[in-house]
Amino acid sequence: MRQSKRAFRLRAPSWWKMGCAIFTVYAAAAIAAPAQTFISLYSFCSQTNCDDGEVPWAGLVQGTDGNLYGTTVFGGHSGHGTAFKITLEGSLRTLYRFCSQTGCPDGYDPYAGLLQGTDGNFYGTTASGGSSCQPGGCGTAFTLSSAGALTTLVSFDDSDGALPQAALIQATNGNFYGTSYEGGAYGSGEVFELTPNGTVTTLHSFCERVPCGGGALPSAGLIQAADGNFYGVTAEGGTGSGCEDKDGCGTVFKITPAGNFTVLYSFCSATGCPDGEDPQGPLVQATDGNFYGTTTYDGDSANGGGTVFRITPQGVLTTLHSFCSQSNCADGAEPYAGVIQATDGNLYGTTYKGGLYNDESNYGGTIFKITLSGTLTTLYNFCSQANCADGSLPTGVITEDTNGTLYGTTYGGGESSTRCAALGCGTVFSLSVGLHEFVEAEPGSAAVGAAVNILGTNLESATSVTFSGTAASFTIVSRSLITTTVPAGATSGEVKVTTPYGTLRSNVPFRVLP
Image (cartoon, rainbow, N blue to C red):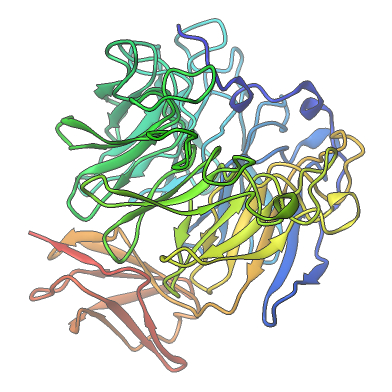
């Protein structure tokens, strides 16, 4: 099996394995702009032997019960990671501790976040473990109930993928799709389809021929765009040159549900890599129909701190911002996570390093906002509290909750770093920037008559639900969940929920399928 060239993604330094004794943080720190409040909700390793988990790499997902769900790479009984639930107030419950079975057939080291499927269960991957590809295992895909019961759907065996690091997505056909960082027919990763009962089909194997013009080593997951096709990035491969010690500098690709594969763009296509290299985070399709993402390195700045980019469905790429363009990288550096489009139409994301409090011992990191035209504003600088109690090194994609608040995780930092070396065990945080409440339809597209969950806040007194103006019958399940079906006559457009407090609108248009 091909050796990973980004080994730190899968094998963190040994000092991360130290135990942690961190207490939960509820201290709020107001940041520079008015109506913006940062809160450190939880510091990992607050329980004996880090039983609550250590070092979250991925972001969070909002569940239908209104809570947030995520994973940690390490910690738990065996030190091999956890899945957890956390309330918006910061009360955390560990749902599952990986490698709890002899030989770790249940997997371990979950770098990927969770996805809540249409059946209400959560789905995810582990980078290691499983019953195949021994010793160590090539990773797994699993389903997890909200009560914490885990079922391993597949143990990857290298030929069908290895070391999956990215979250799964559930497509309009009900199946799950994802990527593996390595494995496949040529050892450089693959795109796969996974049925709910655990049948895996390889749609594409990367690096069919050397050099890897078609891309290699995908560490990010996929998105399904409005055209029904899947889009993603690879960290290496492509026809660009100039990045050191790599077989290409990364790509953006499209793949159809049938497996027809197209490279849309190869990074580092010009001298000096002003367009960036090494995209590690997933894409997002914005309301303008274009895709937005980040590269971890290079760009126009002299320090090569990575970029935010826009790419059209036809493959025309524009660099919106090059990080580390300000003195001492005050605007941030090395964005590992992708960006999201929030309800105000702007993009939000994080940088792994940089910011006002970045130095050789802390590294810092930032939360930023950027308009679709490329105007960047730094919203928060990590490590602004003593010993980085507010967190540092954010690597996961931010989530906008239906209450309008942004939530995320940091890989390092926390209230006490004494047992996780200087960089801490990681945190969960929230950032309020004045965004309004909204509702989210899950799935985001379906045919007439199909069941749809509507997530929101304060839904217990809802009086009507409409799909692009067409009324739908509905059932109030809780203050955070309404169940409904797509009504006859509905067309693609906005979902609205009327309550005594006002009308809540969907964050993205709902698509009615034929």
